[in-house]
Image (cartoon, rainbow, N blue to C red):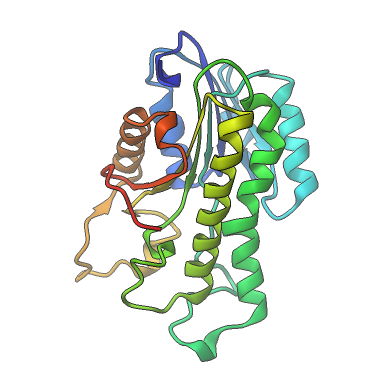
Length: 246
């Protein structure tokens, strides 16, 4: 049985951006959907409903992550799907580096804090709610540029390195949870290029790759997750379901 086949399943989505919101809409269409909890930096209380709860969380603050998990535990005692959509490629100070001379310690540390370190802290905070007899999935949005083997163009030092670090952390977590959480499938997912704040500055009129809407991305990711099971734990797939080399 898959967690999507359960008569009732609960979802936690970390991140309220374009993909996170689209995933929230998509999971509510699955017949067994029971409760969704969205963790985000600036939650909108007007989005709360009987089956959807938005909680405040700062991905760079370990105490905030723990507090969000404690609040979530007051509403659900089991989490069947935990999805990490938190990530940063650019902000007011951070831009992808095109060359070695553009690297700074601040940009590296900021990218690692959000794109790498947040994942194990999230898993740690929700570990108890993921340890049960029902099938479960922990999925984290990685990126193809985090693949060391697939790095053919260079650039984007901080983002590439942080996503590669996230992949190693996820792979290591999958090994541990095979023993402690035997019903949990741990997955790294590449969402593709999506119409979002993260990718918008890098999509031009002559961009040659397919650009997905958030809805298309969410639908594809749900299909990929539905096609995998515990034997696939610790693997890295793109939005089409194809395996990406580490």
